[in-house]
Image (cartoon, helix red, strand yellow):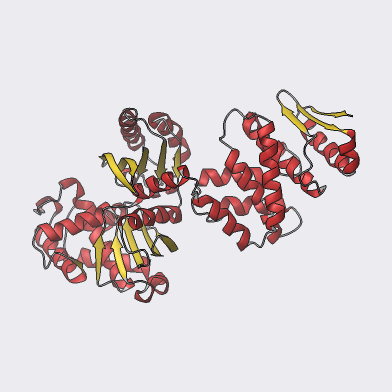
Length: 485
């Protein structure tokens, strides 16, 4: 059983799901329309009131989570926390309230997870699809075929800002509506070549906003009930006739959804006009369902992050045999060090695979170039925090340790750094599988034990280990080398 929590710009939402016979059944859902994006002040900071409201919501979600026996929980935050200047100050109390780490995901990662959720609900495995998701702070547009994502773009236009800009007092008129649509088109016009009709056969809308628009049309007898441009314009005319959001009288639409629906309709029309979409199908699945499927795949060892790393190696033409050797050696040495948890196990392995990525930029300081690429590239499946962790490991693979000295207070991270550095040394010394006589410990000091015969077989290793010992001693960590017969 898994839980997915989505900290969106309009609402915080929770799904608890169970995998059953090839599908995920939703057991529990919760939603709190806190409108976090509206809590950003003019300087881009979340107000104290907005943060307090969010923390209270997360504490309530924690109570719900505690009632279930969960195998994994993933909390993802989207556009508002991507752009808020005080996100770092907000997160510690937020994580304490929910009881789990919060991952601020990129717009591209958000799009991929949305597509996973949508694809899980659609039967046609080879269908070429366009998926549009309109959120409170951003709009994600995804092109894919079957379960495979081909292209993702995140556009910085959402219902909250659009509502504040064009319907600030709740007044709805034709001039403001047309201006809102034109504004939306300006965001999408440069992407027409990527998402035009020649790339897909069916278009889908996955957000709660698009589903609300769909219900407004179907439940209020507008046209034939489809999400066609014709019916969307008819809904627009109906909304204009009300004159004000307080006067809107539509079956099935709650008052709390009015702003999102009105501004979302303008965004949807702008996107459909630019991308040449005559009609779109609303799907009751998106980000949270994608997160649940991602957790299920990780649990069954079908971790798409693995494919991301392998694709990364291919993109930068890394030597896969050297990468694989370092990754496996690092994993072996790390297991000898007996870490307190498996928190860094996968990140160490992936960092080992990517340790020479920086050679694509320069042979001088390649570990620094590699660290930058790992942290800033678009790696599908990874969060910003995960990429930063791997970036630090790649950076730490050689040279002085002062650059990451603060992080070494985490004993397991320090062990991962040691394992990776020695794995790189052993690779340079052309030591392949000859580790039978090597013993490694790290507590208050580092102890490396090997026999003299092993040192004779690998004559340069003494030089490398001597340099390594000096690097650790620079940060006041003793490195003891023991030899035996």
